Image (cartoon, rainbow, N blue to C red; front, side, top):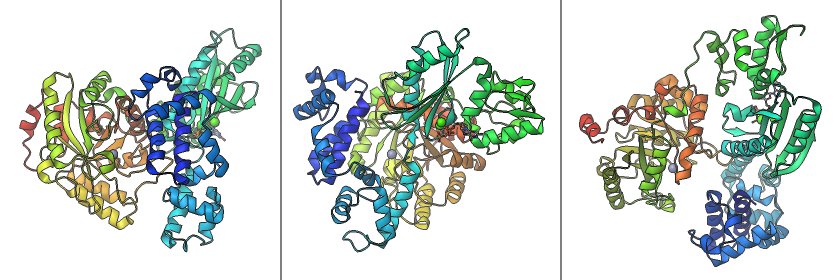
Length: 594
Ligand code: DGT
Ligand code: CA
Ligand code: CA
Ligand code: ZN
């Protein structure tokens, strides 16, 4: 059992207990353990053999060690099974609906036997919920909105889930030995889309191993991948299966000679493909998953590489992230494609948390891990006082913490540590710290963590007020969305971006795979308006720092170049490019660097 599976069992137990009305402490311990195990690098399956080591982990006591032993030993957990006899498993979906907490879910189940999202949708549409205590017409509408979000998101997966699966399956396929020449992810994963529906993998057979018997043997081997839940199809050159988390995987085995055409076809998007095929036809050719050929297919034109096919179509090579048929073909024709930002361009990371608020690592640990990734600077941005659930810092603590951050630079960490804070934007758009505190910070990152449901006009005013505050330099996870869980905050994006451009406020592209916020189309709007962008990770432990690659991928999908992103600059240039704080002396500020 891997940690993800163990965490899932714990998390579901926590949720079922919550519905069942367990006292808070009881389900929280499961939830906390699930969270910890999810991000733990060591295998819990191994660790249960040494319970003393397990117990060193925060929040893991004798009882939890027993539970973990049971889960690893039996593959399940008796309490979870017992609760699932009381409640149908689909009730966990209902709990996922934004705006429905466990108390309400339990009430709906008791009163109407509602146990699926469809049940709840029906009740809301029939107006059956408005009379219930704690509900109303407004909450009925919110529930219907939440149902829509749920429908859009089910069956899709976060980018890192898909990427981790691709990495693991690729390693398995390569174990087949010399029959395999290459394994390449295609589809939405290769395009870096924010969520992935299913995984498309292309395998090329090595020279001398293209006969059907080699392909059959490879298919047999692939289907022995230990993470397979169900085999869906086993064809001549394709196998499909699902993983335990429900993710579907299609693996296609091909000859090298067609690889470029297949990769182009299966990378998509469908809309990009349709446009390319149209262009090929206009040029007297036909393009399919096997080759570019003359119209009647009698003469091969290209097919081995994507580069060759684009070249024949008189187009510059189009990076996969741009293949959405949103202007990339016209740009490629005119040699006007942007030179997209790359991971290696990143020089800093501007949002992360330490043990001072809700992070898992110290300042020094975060600095060392960021340095190892090649960064030249980081801003440590623990939460401000309003976010009590995340142990936000009071003004007093923040002042002391800022001193500590400055002092960290005396320790020869080999990386510049900037004193920052993730300052809450309050309901009225004011910031959660006094100007006096804000003036002491090198980097002021502002974000919303409360009142997500204000109406559009009020939310727009709130954001405008925050942007107009002269201390605001960066807006973090600007729409507050949680992919597959919570919709974006509703406000007038054009107005907000115009205000950012006017005041020199930068928008964050949050790299955390649950957020990817701002998203690609809004990043492109930033670029068009000259709004500055930063790419940050919002790390809560050292492992999260590597998420920056997802932020870069998202920025690429937003057509951004190195020049569009502030934290590609060396530290002093970066500080200079950041919005100037009231009374700031730029020269002095830069000279503080060492
Ligand atoms: P997903 O899986 O929903 O995240 O999105 P994709 O883009 O990976 O879509 P998928 O898995 O259905 O198909 C992979 C690629 O194969 C897709 O991007 C383009 C190509 N493709 C699939 N079906 C069609 C089709 O009917 N026509 C064309 N032109 N291309 C297709
Ligand atoms: Ca796909
Ligand atoms: Ca597919
Ligand atoms: Zn945050």
